[in-house]
Amino acid sequence: MVVLSENVLLQFKNRFENSLEKLPISVVSRSTAIVNDVEYPVKFDFITETIVDYKGQSVTTYIIKIEGTIPGTIKIGSITVLPQHIHLTCEYEILTITNNELKKLVTNDKPLLLYSEWLLEAIENEILVLEVKADNDQLVDWPVGIKNAYFL
Image 1 (cartoon, rainbow, N blue to C red):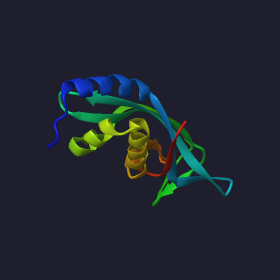
Image 2: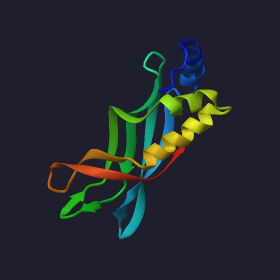
Image 3: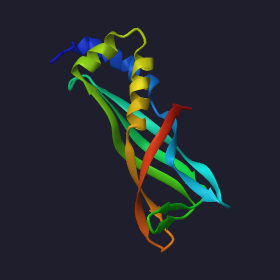
């Protein structure tokens, strides 16, 4: 296990956390919505928060807000998800790095760029489960695969 000094991590924390505070990310789901027999992408915006824990020797990013619109219907088996606006406040852990990755990040010439790449990759490999309204007046869990993610 790599242990970095508190001073090194505190200096890094001050620079790094402020740069990633309330970072907006836009994502496109793998699912498409149908409107008048035409497929449209389903897009969401995420707001993230990144915390550097210098005592615990880790950096963690959370999705703290998800907002988007399902512009048409989405079929999930025999269930049809209705068009709707999604607005969620949450604390969903999307990426945590420790040890060797943390040392690589702290010593990198462009730590924000490196961490940004890791964060986008983590989002694109994630499947979120959102509760959405279906055609039978019930709420259903919709597994959202992320096709791509990018910073706004």
